[in-house]
Image (cartoon, rainbow, N blue to C red; front, side):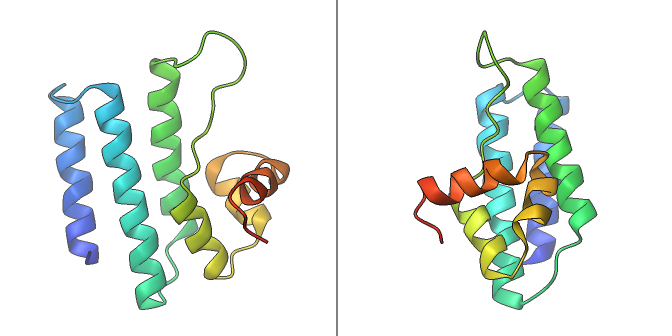
Length: 119
């Protein structure tokens, strides 16, 4: 997917959220698809995506999760899609930088890598 199409997808998602035409799970699923497209674009074009932009996108997702709790106890589970994690690692990002993007600890990234058979 080309960058203009990714931007258009984000704009359409924002309209759906504003119009309440998608439920929480639909928004989350669509959001993750857009992030995967962004990671694929980054890998395919050897383009360095602005870390601040990605961090802002994850901040939006975390705020959305704060509004709609999925669990009753404990910290909310941060979903780190395998393809996105793998894309960042293949692009040479350090685990510390990836952890900062997702707002989690470096150890969490290492656990997700291990559970997905990476490194």
